[in-house]
Length: 314
Image 1 (cartoon, one colour):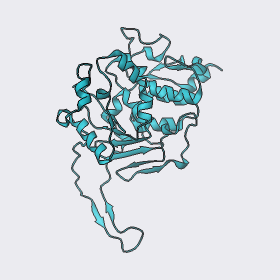
Image 2 (cartoon, rainbow, N blue to C red):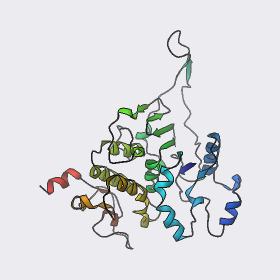
Image 3 (spheres, helix red, strand yellow):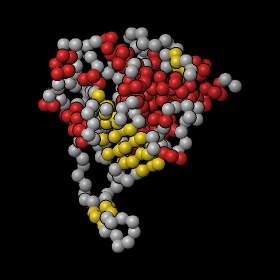
Image 4 (cartoon, helix red, strand yellow):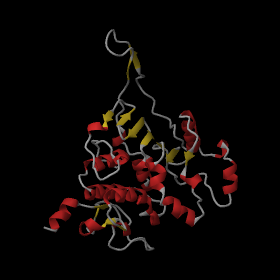
């Protein structure tokens, strides 16, 4: 099956509730779907696959019990998918996956070499920005971080180009390609979490994979994850920990460590230190969400400075 990673946006997408469940099981007319869902159906059919998982349709949106059960199962849902489609450039369900692209000043030119291994070569204008340098709407949504990080394969539909992420390679439409066979990767994580390094320092999914790849220990991986995660938005701040549950379960399988409200027991003293990122507003939530000693108890961007913390304990 294929899974969809997308932004809900300000307009609520087509959902399933207890009242509409029977009708949904009988079938969902394509005409009733928002454009992003229609495009995801088209991609799934072109891949000759039969099943598509979409959160708003496959989780009862008015059932607390069903939501808690399924949100805790996100790691399995995305991790066991054949492919995850990332509607990276769409801000909501109506914009669609196949977004209009900027018109090219210079169209691609076909060349036919007289010798060599290729019958034809195409020369095209290099886009100014690569995916790692251009944050997409999906890179601002907290839930989407684990959705793309846990998937074994991700097809990224960006604003300017198409991207492919998997355990063996990363390929981008502009010709960028990386073979992961010899890339260093943290051994503590499942192979599907391993991604190649990138040069950008901006907040994108590609940058998160770079941070994971640079991490040498579980602690460094977690600090990179938290720093990246807290730059993203949540519709409901109460989801601050649930939106990471799939990733935490994967890390727990690899390390056997105990997870304590956003902090790992073996690094408890270190992770109790959290710095509020400069230039970002923060506040305490009106309702209880996590213990006061956890970074998850704060609304806003945080940084876990590993080197600074380690020095403080020597």
